[in-house]
Length: 171
Image (tube, rainbow, N blue to C red; front, side):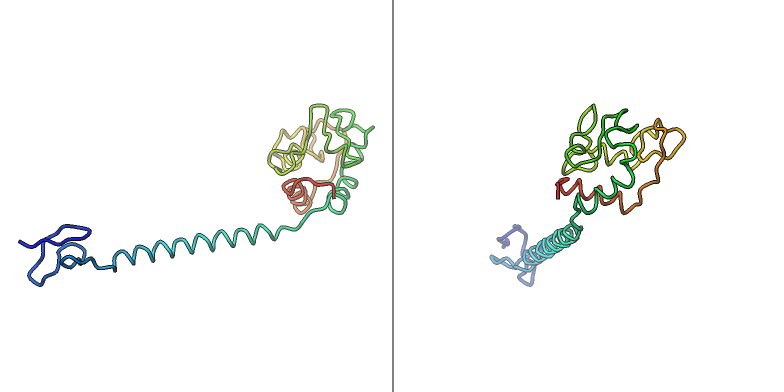
C-alpha cells in the first residue's frame, strides 16, 4: 500500500490523493499552512492597529500646567483653609500656597505621587475615595472641617488626575 509523506503519513486513495488534509503523494499542499499564516498576519495587523489607536488616543490628552490649570483651582477652592494658617493647614499640615508646599504634603507625608493619580492622596481626597469626613473640599455635615467649599467640577478633577499622571510638574 502506498502511503503519503508530509505532515501526516496517511493512506493514498484511489485518485492518488492522501486522505489527510488534501496532501498529495510525497508533496504537501501549501494552502493550509498559508491560510494559518494569513490568519496570524491578520491577527497581528489587528493587534498593531489597536496598539496604534490606543497610543494616539492616549497622546491626545492635553498637557496640564500647574501654573495655568492647577494653581487657580487651589487658589479659588482650597487656600481659604490651606493657606499655611487656616483650619486645614493647622489640622493636617497641608499648605497649598506654592508648588513646593503642595509637594511637601502633610504632617504624615506627601499627598502627590508624580505619575500616579490613583496612588496620590490628593486625588483620592478629591474623588470621594476616602472617608467622607476628610473629603475635600468639605461639603457634608459629617466633615471634620468646619469650613465648607463648593465641590470641584468633573473637569477640574480630571485636570488634577492628568497633571499628576503627567508627572505633577512645576510648569
